[in-house]
Image (cartoon, rainbow, N blue to C red; front, side, top):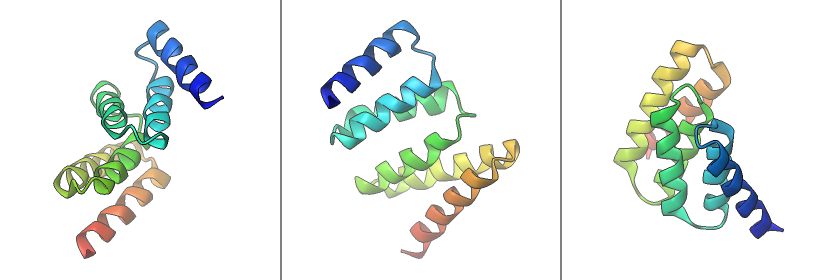
Length: 106
């Protein structure tokens, strides 16, 4: 079933590579499978192409942290905080601030 999910998401992405939800779902699916490089690539593409898709910053930041990429995590979290502040995405903003504070405290 999981392989089917990945294949299905890849097919959706091929049909509409600009669909933010599909790109996010592909990144998440790759991350769940331990395909970190693919997940990072999809998340980074989404941040660049659709910066207002605010949930991406949290997941990309956490993925960077899981790989020991603290500098990259800090940068993406700060970018996400700026975007969420501008868009008034309060829930995502709070989550990003919490992760950044924990990172700064570590």
